[in-house]
Length: 124
Image (cartoon, rainbow, N blue to C red; front, top):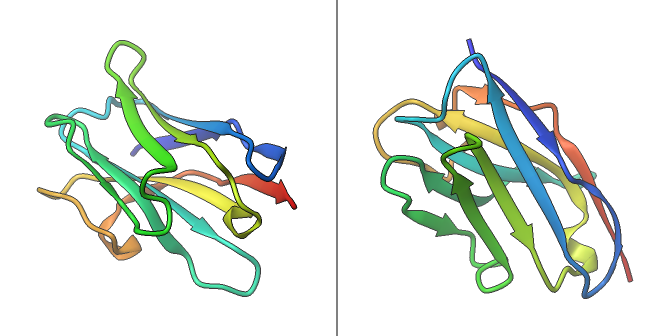
């Protein structure tokens, strides 16, 4: 089993920045793809970004491309989501997820493990 622990959420003004962190307990991210998803009130969970740990390849939803950056720190076994130029519509609970199958996916069903979520609120 893998438990994922997210941190870094909070309240920020529109145009500001936040950095989310995701770290696993009990395992390393090696051979996993790690994704960030978000869910706003009354809306479905949506894909934000993903990184394939071993290759470092990254993928983004169109809505965040150019504003968000997903990255990894091998030594700390941690994945980050740097969020810049935040907008009110970025307000949501953000979830970290890890999948062990080859490749990666924008579908939440593909991922095997999920964190508890961290709230991001962008005030306009």
